[in-house]
Length: 88
Image (tube, rainbow, N blue to C red):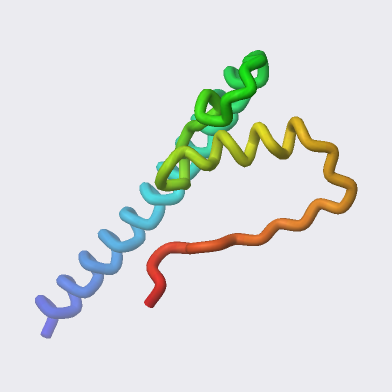
């Protein structure tokens, strides 16, 4: 029985460690997005593809959305998320 309890504690510690690493990785990605957004601020091209970068998006829309939010005067800002994680 002690062995089972010890294994359970080990698994619990591993899950906790993985969770912390996942949170830290998300923070690194957010910081990367901030850097990329600052780099794109100086661009003057009219081609939206030139503003693409992906941090959490799949196809580069993070950069495009960042550019549009910065460029378009939006009176009432509302956030809507489409396609979060899996659709199950």
